[in-house]
Length: 425
Figure 1 (tube, helix red, strand yellow):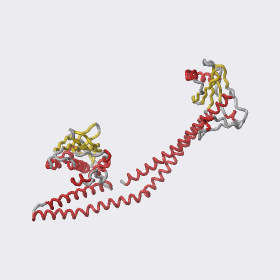
Figure 2: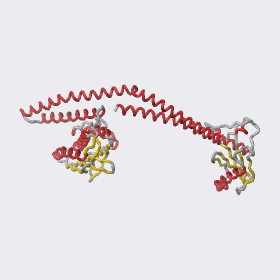
Figure 3: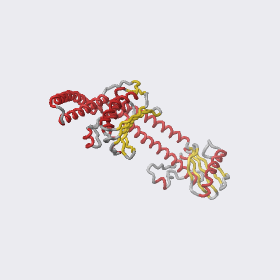
Figure 4: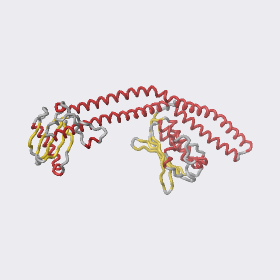
């Protein structure tokens, strides 16, 4: 239990830190990528406007009205070095897609033939759009950022080489990943060694609580045994009466509560289950035969369908306790002259153990809380049946220890409500 709590605390912290790092570093890389595209869009705006050359007025910003309203906008500053820092080329096509001229003076890695081919490929892609719209088209093709703008004589295709900037962005992304990994490792080590100290007050309180339950349970066993023996003596001398019946009933309920509390305390401490291959069918059959007379004495119909020889790696005593708790719960909360059904079958690799009883419908919002310790959805009903809300929490602890799943649901059968508890192993 303590180890599970420690690892849950570590996992929670690490997920939170990883999410924060992902948000911060992801945002930085995304903003850098968006600014890269914006930079080359402004560059292409400028060179297309000036016919393939830069403005002679250095120091101006070419950001458009659209980009000026962005928080993380990029403002391209034109300096004397700008023409030498950027590689770009232009291709001019007429309205039919025929090449009119090219300008590859500002790039050495692309010739006129390759430039023409790139422009024609884009023209074929956007041909239908260009004939209907005069708006500029921007995008990314291979390592180039491109812009297509309409002119009186046709279209101008501007391409800017982003290779170096892409390489820089990739390096930044790898660096971010390395930093994030290093930070996560450091934080994991800090949290791992600090977790025990952080959780120590809570662990100490839990251990004291468990110790109190264990001590109180053992201390209460003796007076209950004495009370039970005294009742036997009274009934031998004076006969059975309503008072002795009440004492015996309350003693039995208290003994059952102590048994469940001690079992649950053992499950949450260092109780090690002996896992071995057990015949779950035989265990279920034996428990059902033991509880059947109780159901019959209360005029309740009890049916069972148990698939033979279902084998499972489990703790035999824990499985017996599980079936006993859930079957006793079904008998206890079954309506007068109602029906109880026990099913055990295997579907695929999953073992299904189901307990159904006719009873009052349980609200959906309380279904999950049924397995909480001491939780009772209907106090009046539990007073009449003697429930303390501890049995189902014991059942869940056993199922969880076996890496299974337990659920509760309402069903309808012949116009009556059926409450079903289902275990999947």
